[in-house]
Length: 175
Figure (spheres, rainbow, N blue to C red):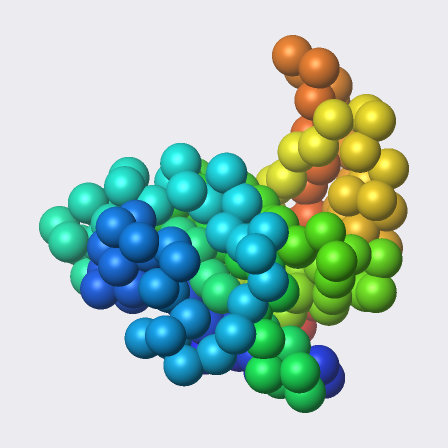
């Protein structure tokens, strides 16, 4: 289920990895076998891990619809995470991502989002991927726009975006 792009290796976090990461983030690189910078994992992933681990323990089909590790395959270093916030609902999944501060502004987020869109849209039951960011988060806004996301609405201080399968693959293109 791993994804490989030009510079990245993206892998879903297993229940065992989630549990170990929740217990002791500092020893994470020892059992993962790769270094990461001290700014990872971010608070968003830390908050999501307990919910994701419980869901994955109950349903193996959750794998892929939670957090994934982003690794720079040339540096052999974890640089962030990306993932979906659960299974598709009415053909829609929400994506979120985090790239450690020292690895930002190098195109990693754009490349990771692009790879995850391809993965999501390869599933017949997913037709829309949504994302949100604050209006002041210009880099994230640029990442989403560069990946074909269109603004859907503004709500509760966030701009909501959507990417639709037909925009990426055409209405009649088979996956």
